[in-house]
Image (cartoon, rainbow over all chains, first blue to last red; front, side, top):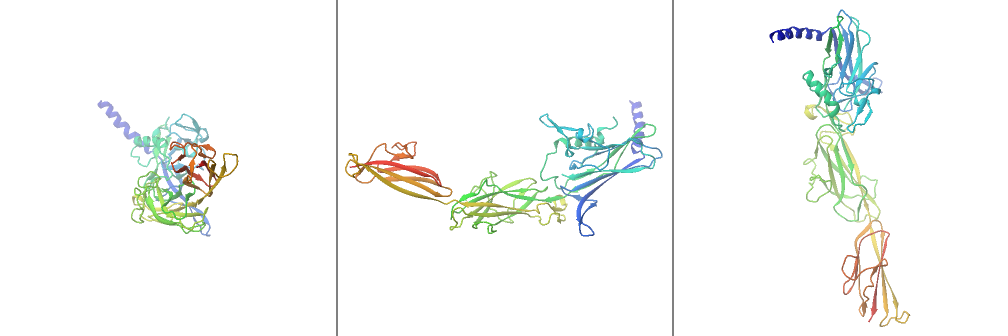
Length: 154
Length: 336
């Protein structure tokens, strides 16, 4: 027993260090509101919201940066859609989706939702629970980038 | 395989990875669809997770900062007239009931100020509103004495998000309202917190101390309920034909007189509780079994059918007779 505890004690800090990594991730949320622009015409502006109301259109922006000296391979970025938000599409290519809480993944068109009566129907944006970008290429040292998706407050 | 379920680490109330995985998984299944949207005061938190490999193959993961948004209270209300068709009424009647449904379309509990407009135009007469009543016993129908009279500012109905209440407007119909004319009453419900242009905000007045924001309905709604006057009138015609025992029409002892009583209802709507009664004339005797309604014989006894011989005359209960219909009662007497 004592040996096991000792091993765990050694492993745990190492894992924590690895989890810290040298890729950093940032999350920003903007709300798109229509307001009069400088020319007086309505224009869509992005604001950093403190508060939102149902129906507000949100843009989730995820930034990543490899601040290490080595490339990061097998990079996968996952964002669960918050419970009170309906997914409304993504302009960043290459995303895969889950409609079952992250258990299975695929292009949205390939996913199905099973109803209580056992019938399946094609999944829609409103069914999306998670979005993920899996990068085929390594992120070079020092590189950074952004992906984004949209949602609507339920 | 490195894509573990715990990457599902975003939930408003996530405290640790395990809890988050559980709540996020159940969220996809159990969240009920609500017209009013996310409850006021709810926090929306977003956290992204990335996994990747170090050059030596060691898997690593990193979490983003958490961004939290608070959901403000949205003020929305709808009013819908709930009667299936124009409420039939008649000139001069009091206590004529219109039903409405007031629904909180917002995402927080809210009270509503009610009011009526009866002279808004676009109709034939102005009902005189005598009261607004709340469906206190929740049965969807107006119950005099059981449903509370509404007093503005005193018992403004307080509704949870998506909750509805039935509201009844009682009116008196003008005595001079013409047959077939229609009159409307408009019921208005306005959010007590405030109303106005969609997007207008009332700082600090939302549920949970946030702002209250006027929704698409302007936090004010109204609908028209309609009365229609159905004035039916009864015309009553009596005729007689005589048949003497010799094949002629001479009125003398032994001759049979057949009386035909025609009730015609005209106008619109119907007349209730119409009864045709006629005494047997002096000097004649009722011919037993001669009573008929629309050519169908009726028994003389006071039994299941509509008519009877009372001993001094005949009586036929026609019940409700719709406008445009005619009922014909016949009976015979013999001249003594």
